[in-house]
Length: 328
View 1 (cartoon, one colour):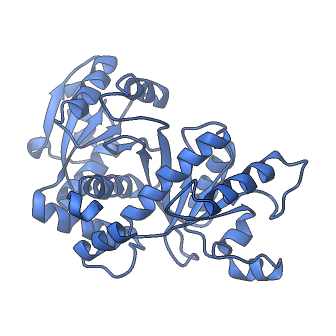
View 2 (cartoon, rainbow, N blue to C red; view 1 turned 135 degrees about the vertical axis):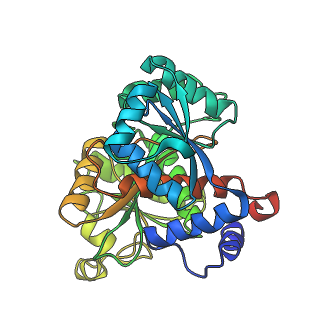
């Protein structure tokens, strides 16, 4: 916790980052000290992502590198009125070769952040995991989403809605640890982790309630450090004190969760898209588990969510690379 407190003092904040606009401001401040992060967009023939890159570049968050078919990249940029004079464009016409070169740039330390462009997610992940050792991926690579929801009192994190299909108990532990690191980067020293289920009690007929109760006890016994963990918890009990009080569920997590951990990808994907479409949440997501952050956004992200993901990855990169005295 001391390292997170030192991190927030460096940012000049007393409270955790609670909005994406504040996150972008922090990234701008960090860039003024050391320059924007070098972000490589793999297979960059995507107008929407180039537009997001331009928004991030204009705010000095990143220095973009576009890898792919240069004529396709130029056409995509023209369609959204982006001038590429300030961009590094690497012409690699074949998409598999472009993807490999993008990952290689991360390995060679020619880039700080890797973002998926016009390439299937499965191919992107295969290319990344093929360089697992060089990229410092000792365990599970997971996606963590941050959500700014109008009717929630703080930034809410969720994992994993995109990568791990049906995590085992051990994989859930890794998902939690990765999510804790993102919460720490937001300045949350001791995040409150809610393990999702349909009910708040252990039901022998519902496997996830048994599993989540075990993980909760692992947190109590110090087998997962750096967080307050409770589960099983239903969504309303995890997020609303009134529901927790009505159902008689006590504890520090109930009604005040920082992180929601889902049980399988379908559950997370439906919850994530429901919050965006029906609750008008703003989001940003990042792949965690590597020495360097990566971004793999949905093709149907709403406006500005790609920018938020870029800002989140930039923030996380700075957090990972803070001085040893700050990380102690």
